[in-house]
Figure 1 (cartoon, one colour):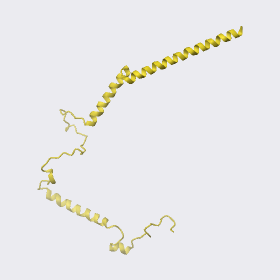
Figure 2: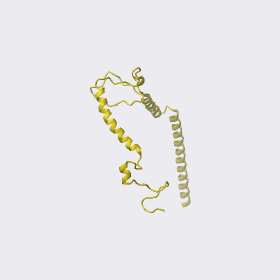
Figure 3: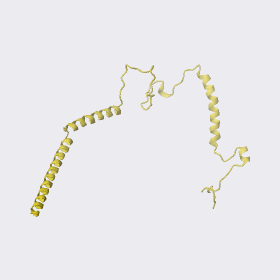
Length: 160
């Protein structure tokens, strides 16, 4: 059972590369790393060659791009326009979500206006409840006043 900073792996002991293995290139390191380095070197050399070749030739298009002009609806278009690129005559069209959001806000504003005026069903119910509560409070206040008056009379009669 190992102790200390490094715990044993479930697959067995840790294996380290020896200097001989590193020189021979047969270390336990994954081979993909060497392939990636080789690919990067090849890409750098092929970029220089392709730049020289593409100067005289027009750019080739893949698949049906040359035949059909496709506009990707998921493509994010740059939102920042420079002043010289801006088209002032063109009216901007709102997206469906933006239109729905504006309609929702306007409907809410209309509803709140009607609510303030007391014309909606909910406003009418609220006003009825408010009137009922006011009536109950007025009755309770009147009853308390009558009870106080009755207590005061009993005290006056009790002193006599």
